Length: 438
Image 1 (cartoon, rainbow, N blue to C red):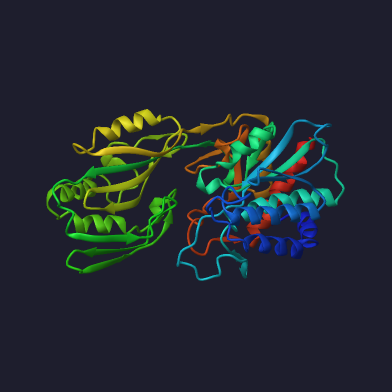
Image 2: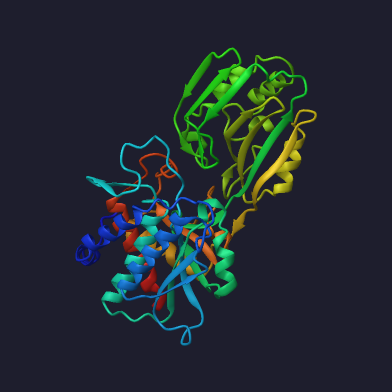
């Protein structure tokens, strides 16, 4: 990848300390989704970080606003009366929770040489603030923009994007924009996502030999720890390697190990685990379920086995399937149902159909060229396994922040972002916003 341009490096250096101070303040808020409370629809953490970011933006001289205490915005350029349409940068300030896999303080900014650590430094506070700072650099140079540009700060992306309908009920949708919450180059297509629970009722008391199964089970990642306790009080601890659920091939999940140990049980419980070992196990493509769909545009289906539970009445697993953009949810479910055991139930937890934009649009072509010129890397638009705000707001596609080869960083301990990458993405976004005048 190319070095930062000398002109941008010089400009950035004048504000570097200010930007790092502001980023540190934002990272220090544990903005994990919480219980609804007064004037805080998604919990006090997301509400407080939104207030801080809007205070920073106001101090920078931007026009600011907030919708229903859950989505804020800062803008520059013509006023709404002068330019009803606007270009948007849409990101989020909420973060996933932390567990005990951190070496560094999660809710702070720790810089070690070229690496910056902290929850949200990549997903998504760091990139979102990079866009605000890029717009600030334009403003400080007194560059006039021909159209209104709005940076939008969401607070519920990690828990279902319930914030965006509030915003759209009060504010006009942008005519175009991007979310810096995925990867570079431009992402024109997001695979469909189907989050499922596969369960089997237990009526023969065959699960009585298991007392408890506990672990770090969450849909955002594949677990690296669990403990199984049997009725006779003997216990077994499992340890592995965590990875985000959209990168299951990078994990050494403990769940297949538990399945192997329990498939020797008798009765319905044993039957369920034998089925699970055969049809899912360690696979990440769905081959043994007959759902290993693939296409040329977005590649192969990705299966993530992220949860397992055993009670006296039921055993179940939860999985996510991120499927190619040419496949439908109906095709996927129909094939899955042919593989289930008798009396096994399939329940849909979450469902997001594929989302595809036209990669030949002038804006996508322009941003692809900017990315390629700035980095020296291939700017051909790509698809992703991720689910972003692009699905929640019209006219949005993903653009950044991770560079090729960077995968499996978010949603786990010691989340990081290279300082040099933060500079480069800020340069890319700076150039992208300036190009709106072309």
